[in-house]
Length: 81
Image 1 (cartoon, rainbow, N blue to C red):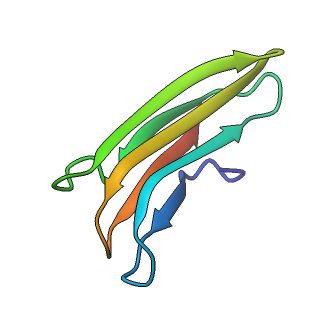
Image 2: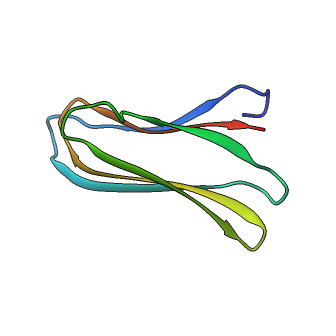
């Protein structure tokens, strides 16, 4: 994101451990904003949501995924505005 390139914040599941729920938050420094795109949104059976909030003037981007099948990428792609 530092060089005006998007950055992916993802989780890749494996067959070693069944993951029922994952949640990940990215907090940007005060004064920064980004656009986001969900990764894995079109995967069958994945329930993926995103939320944007403000915490003391800092933008917080959070994604949550439920029912994540094995060998699946889920997450969020951020690009600074």
